[in-house]
Length: 377
Image (cartoon, rainbow, N blue to C red; front, side):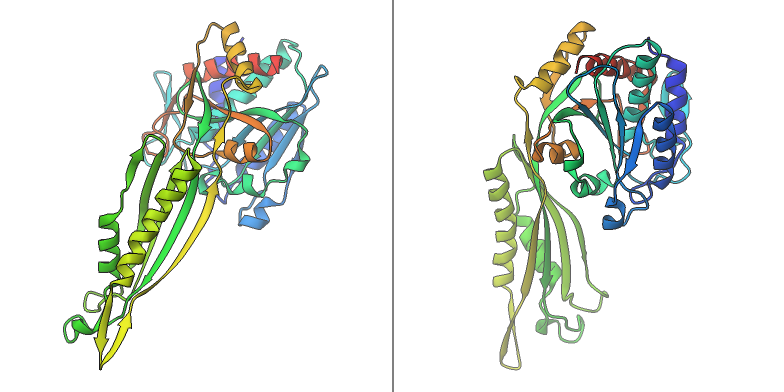
């Protein structure tokens, strides 16, 4: 049923439209035209104005051809960078970029697969119920579009997100995450004339980081310090440094413990850092900001949405792997608003790199599975 050439052409068109985070207007305009032609009612929200994007989230609603409960498919319009002047190449059935940008298969493979599935259903007069397709903005920047989305505008209470690597994978669990911002203030002094009068913020941070447990902490938890910024010049004891990091865990308790452990390392090193200048003891200080990045999602394997996907795949004789993920996606946000959603693989590989790729054969298989899921939803 799948038209391989049409699917390839669709992906090529999508990948050729630059859509880095905060600059999704061009891809949004294309999708508005494309889904209107497919018969959907298309609307945009005002999330873009709230987060600084040139587009809002887009919702395409299909009335369906039979009665039934509404079903949601969620995808995101933005890509990571470098994403300017993307040139998709098709070689031996595999799409890549020209090598100087990402390809954008994350998440345009999923978009192309869904479009092909809808084309097939219309061509074959395959009955399906009401369908709501949500395209978010700035997913790659911390799920910003989904966080600004008004979920009261949706009727569906279950669905799928197309946004993970591989195929025939159902992601039913994903961790919660905290973002951590730590600003350490030491005391500046001339590094050559009076270094003993300064307190190096960089040294404090280095000591603190050396005591932290980072990387994979246990089978549920990871932690990372991702950026360090500070210092002015080589001849100045650095007075300021900023650390940015994160902790992720499938366990709320372990998330709290790992976050507190990072903070504690910094607090203790700051507390132990002081210097006497002209008889006055001066101390280092710090400021900490911890934000919940996204909540955990855990959909039981017995849940209706998981069973729907497994049943659809069984009809195609396609065994599925039900697994946990280490990253967050829009599905985390949807689930936190009471919408039961799992994540499906789209075939994309080596995402967020210049070697990103997707095979046409894998996209065909995903489109085929989508047809079966939507018609049985």
